[in-house]
Image (cartoon, rainbow, N blue to C red; front, side, top):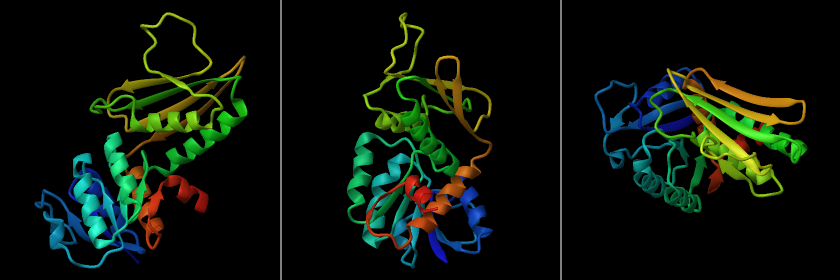
Length: 252
């Protein structure tokens, strides 16, 4: 039985994870942390994490990037592994959790969906086979309330492709101001915002007389919660280090 502490338990994703774990016989939430303690849960909720002194196997953080330092300090003090399911970290914050991974197990993925991470793995394989003969474009679509563009997932896809290419890629975000032919070294990234789209990501490999597309569509935020719970089970009893969805996929 995996014992989980849920940081950000009363947020939207925290409540989705609460429901999923309640239906799972192999894990349970033993405590929650949140600045808002007005929601009734089946587990105790603390506004001050230090008030929880019970036993746990892992902390899932689905709160806000600004909470990172406090979350890491708490987990290092308690020697708890941590799942960082929040997005929007700065480069300095990423270095912060990389440093923390020397002391505790840290799991971070730009997207917690198992499907998205499988898409990235397939994109890398396709890149190896198609490099030099196909232009690569990434199109992402999200709801009209999303602030950042392109999405962190689109950038993660581009980074994975860039790492696979034998040459450094140039990311191009906006073509309307550049009146010139497309270079072979470019990866185009395009953002669409509208309605209530949870998240769509298309990878287009456009060659001579043929086009190959890889696509992932998320129809609810539950796919991210499922990934976070799977990561919590995976990281339990692992040694200190930095883990991601690739570790889960390769372990399947």
